[in-house]
Image (cartoon, helix red, strand yellow):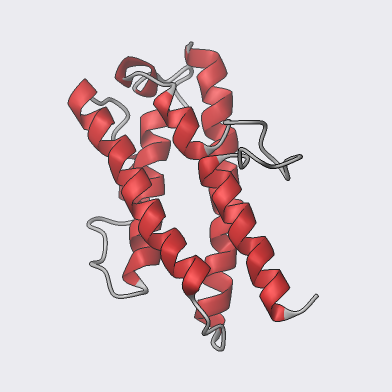
Amino acid sequence: MDNASFHEAAVELLREAFEGVKPDANGTWFVQGSQAILPSLLEVTAAQASQKPQPELASIGAHTRHLIYMLTWANACHGEARPEGNWESTWDRDSFSDEEWDAMRSEVEQRYRAYFAWFRDNSDWSHEIGVIAPLAMLPHAAYHLGAIRQLMALVK
């Protein structure tokens, strides 16, 4: 596999993690239909996003805050503002109003779209942080997608 093919595959996997299966696709790599991050978050109400099925579990809203932080950091590597707080502080809140939840879902999408545009169009893969950080985004996003989907089953 050449570099261009590898890059195209990584772009497709990132897109699938956040957006789901392309409408014209014959199959999927790891999500079913619209069970990706963005469509999944649209299925969840603020009340559901704020539930903790067990005390030791984070809420869907907390996972969403963490995704926002992760995407903000990723975009900061390409010139956007750094996120406020730190990695651990993204888990400090579990409960969100309807307005906060709507704003968070919009922010995840906006930050994802900005990151995806960079990831898709980037042609400089010559330094370690420019290779490992984007590729780390894939399993990290997939982990949070899995956690969100499991929590969805518990809070509906």
